[in-house]
Image 1 (cartoon, helix red, strand yellow):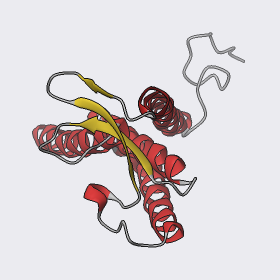
Image 2 (cartoon, one colour):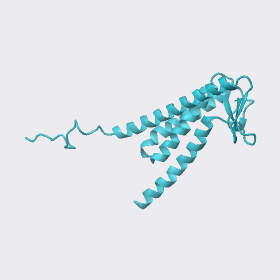
Image 3 (cartoon, helix red, strand yellow):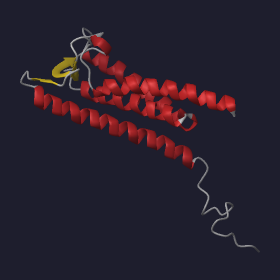
Image 4 (spheres, helix red, strand yellow):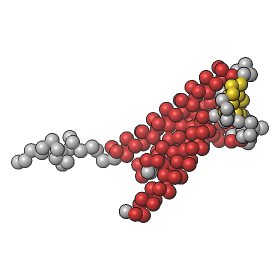
Length: 175
C-alpha cells in the first residue's frame, strides 16, 4: 500500500474540490462590486455633507455641485414614479449581477474587472435611489450632464468588459 506524499495531486487533502476556483472567482467579483458600491455611497454622503448648502467647489475640468437625478442616465424618465425607476433599476442590476457572477469563471480578468465595476456602480446608484430623492450627482462640467462616481464605474466598466472580451477572444484564436 502506498501513502500519498504531501505534493501528490491525487491526495484529496491537497486537491481543491472541483469548482473551488470558480467559486473564488465569483466571490471575488461580488466582493469587488460591493467595495466599489460602498465607496460610491460614502463619497456621495461626503458630497451631500460638503455641498448641501449650495456650495460649489472648482476643481478645474469639473466642479463639485450637488444635484439629485430622479431619472436614469441623462435624467431620462425623471417624470416617472420613483417606485417604477427603482424597480426597473433593481431588475437591471440584479440581472447584470446574475449574468456577471454566472459567467465570471469563463471571463478574461479584464472583463471580470469591468463587470465588477458595472455591478458595483449600478448597485451604488440603486441603493442611493431608495430614499426617493433620486441619485446624488456631484461631478459637474457645465458641458456634460452632472454625474457621480457610480456613473464613472458603469461607463469605464462597460469599456473594460468589452475590451477584455475582444482581447480574450483574440487570445483564444491564437491558441
